[in-house]
Amino acid sequence: MTNIGGEIKEISIIDVKKGNDVQVILGHAGFIKTVLDLYEAMVGSVPDIKFGLAFAEASGACLVRMEGNDETLKLEAERNMMRIGAGHSFIILFKNAFPINLVNELKNVQEVVHIYCATANPVQVIVAKTEQGNSILGVVDGYKPKGVESDEDIKKRLALLRELGYKR
Image (cartoon, rainbow, N blue to C red; front, side, top):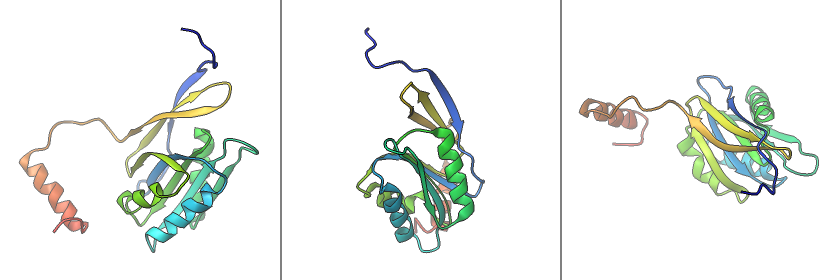
């Protein structure tokens, strides 16, 4: 097989750094106004949401652009994005909401092409490095399964959904 586009120099696993009470959404989008459109989607989705987001440009100045309404979460998002370093990717760290409250709104942002994960779990990002830059190959969201749910587990799941207001 002929290699006409370069080669992968390294594959690394980047842990997303966040507090235990912080949710994360990681995605791919592309345009300089993405950071503003993501901001508007966030504040328009949940009234009391606290968040910080970072978006990595893939051309021009190639800067990490930040927005949000919580300075600590903005700084954490910036640090995570600098470590991931993949152009046209974004990360949103947030509190006071669940991913289910935001994902559809974010998918409706014109620039958003893909959402890799939306979770409260620990997240690892698998990144490939080439001469040109970095690419997100995928994510590890949480842990591997430990078994299959029992009847008791089903009852607990449904009770949690009722407690959260998603099931009667």
